[in-house]
Length: 234
Image 1: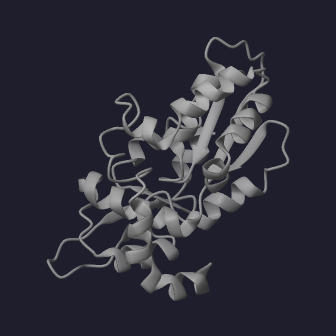
Image 2: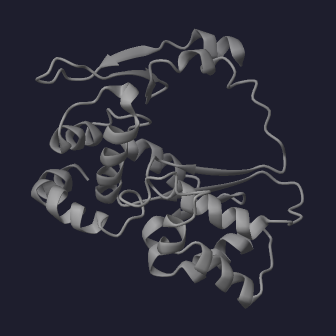
C-alpha cells in the first residue's frame, strides 16, 4: 500500500491569476484537490490504523461537520458501541455549501492567498477546483455507499427541518437507545443559537458564518444572480 501511495503522481494545479498578481496553489491527488503542503502526509495514509470501533464523520467542507460531530458526541457519550466501524456522511445543498465555503475560505484559509470575488470562487467550485473538490465526486461516492450496513447518509437540510427525528436516526444507527428527554436535551444543545454561543464548538466564526441565520440573506444577495449558471451545472 505504501509503495502504491508513493508511486501516485501528484499534479500541481495553478489557479487563475487575479488583478493584484497573487495566485492560489492546490495540488491534485487521486482526483481531489489538496493544499500544496499536504504531500508529506500522504505517505502515512496507507498505514493509518483504523480501529474496529471507530465512528467516522465524513463531509465536504462547510456541510455540517461540527454540527454532526456534536450530535454524535452527545449520542455516544458513555455509550458501549460494540465492535463495528461506522461511517456517517452528511451532505448539503451545493448552493448553500459554496456560499458558506467562500466565506470560510477567504477569511480563514489565508494560506491559499485566494483574492478573487464570489463569482470567481463559484466558478472554481462548479469546476471542482477548490480545496477537497470536486464537490459532486465527493458526494456521489458517498451516495453510492448509502445502502451499506455501516454507512449512514444524512442531509443538512433534513436536520434543519427536523433535528429531533434525525437525532433519533443517528442514535439508532449507532445502536444507542435514548429517552425522549435525552433527545430533547441534544436537540436543544445542538440548536443554531446554542451552537453559536458554545465556545467549545463555535470556533469564533459561527456568529457570522456557517450556521448563522444571516447566511440566508447572503445566499439571496450573492448567489441568486448566479443561480442560472449554477443551475446549468447542477
